[in-house]
Length: 402
Image 1: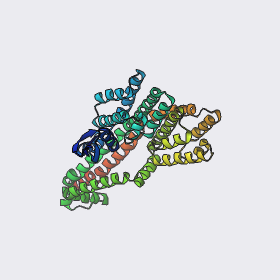
Image 2: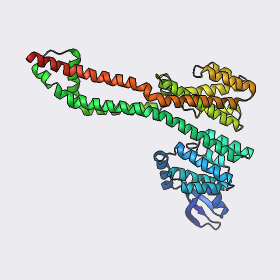
Image 3: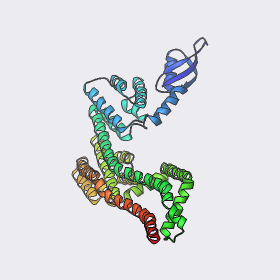
Image 4: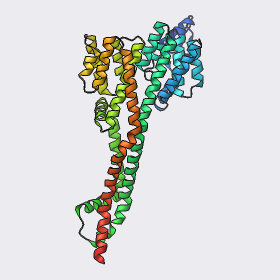
């Protein structure tokens, strides 16, 4: 970061300028080392505004993160100094925000702090899990292995999330296209089809009257409907960004037919994999559970694992706490119990990860097959309602005229 400063020399002369460093305090230290006594130091607004803009519009993706850690592990294995390695990675990174953050981390490390501490100052990018694994690697002297752990973990989570997103893309596109077409049909086509029915003044069933009324309203006030839809979507998005909204949505996701089971398996896979990585890295079980709770991605599971950490702290077994929760399948709690009895919890968690990871992959592959019949029934009902409500009365009136 760049800081503008005003300072005085030993003889009282006023100096102004810019100094590049990691923090305001570090800037003051640099000025004092150069026999300057700071009067005022502030971060350059242009740089701060640029960082804020990039933070929101050039977000660091999981793919960028695991590539970064993979490259860092390779350079560490080649005995390249940390600062040199970060500079090399930064120069070839395409993400502007990641490049900016790495530049700040490089300056921090040059000022004498560790890699884990430098990363911990950028928690909007680097998770607690990644930071603690790297900190454990620094303490044990095996930083390269810890960085590889982090890279593997982020990559597996990235692949798992992508499988779920891919499975949800097809039904989402089908539903979106259906609603757009339905909106256009009701607004543009139905009013023209029902002109003859209205002109003849023939008696029609209630559902035809409903379609005629809806079509007339949409033809006149389609813009108002679009505004209402946009307002509704905006309201939902705002609500889901609140703590209460996220909790409600996390609960709903687990209750959805078909999809809910897949979400449940995803969270169990994240739990077992991340906890196994932390335990293998030498992180104590209570701290590991606390860290895992923050990276699961579901508030109900987060509360469960925080509660588990509290109970383990009181002397209770992790398996006993998990066994009481309906969020955890019995097989998981039994396997964790076996791991506790044998002293191989991380190994058992690895097997849980493998099993539920395969289940998620299988469900993701079959998702379109499972959801397609439901979508076809919904679309078919919508088309049938329009056909029966409009076309059948027209045919009946035409037959009476003959």
